Length: 304
Ligand SMILES: [Zn+2]
Image 1 (cartoon, helix red, strand yellow):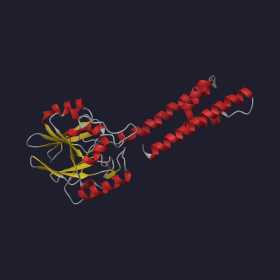
Image 2: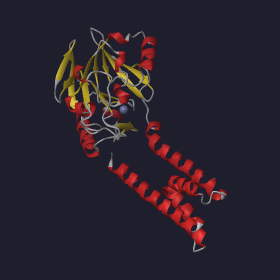
Image 3: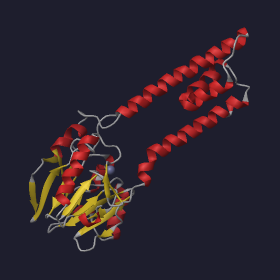
Image 4: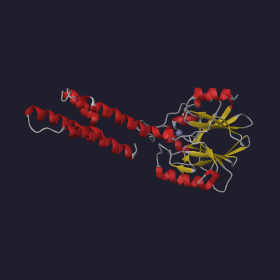
């Protein structure tokens, strides 16, 4: 859990306990005809996060249950709070701008848009090399067949990292060897947690994944692939430089209006900043085309 998430949870626990105590005290005060807690104070505590606990307590001890101000007001506050939480959580997705399906001009890269992300195919002599496997196997399969590409012809898959929107559709490619940074393995076997619920689940046997490391070069049908460790977003995020010209970066950064930024759901932001600097250094003074998973593609000339 990130520090911010811990602070939010602790805050919600404290404010919820406060809401319960105030509600119980007010009920007791009403029974003993002593000084009450003002309605304003109760609604204020509800509005700053105690709403659910207060409503549950009022129902449980039958306090204020005849007051519309509370019985309608607090549920309205709860709905508003849920809406705000959803907007905060969902808004990164509105800012995403994945590459549309089709051939990328003047390259031999073919993009497949899958919801909010894109995966990229590079044609080789024996089939296709795929960079990230996307999320929705059914969707990717239908986009591929519309473009006369057979998923069985994908021979290699290079994963930039193990998040489910990048490794979710692996099962669609039974003939592919799967490559990933060795440093990402602890996230897959659950040694390192990705979120509250644990590591990243991958649909293939962990022993069947080929592990690569920083600086390693592979040659596939004469196509050279350089593995560049790009940690930060996840511990073992990896970028791949293909033929010295195409750089597949996954979620190493966001790209908007010529600027690179920290990707949502990044594990280590300072490390991610270092990675971004390192990758900018590679792209500067080069003819490299950078392909991101959620923000399209660009060259150094697009950077500001
Ligand atoms: Zn992603």
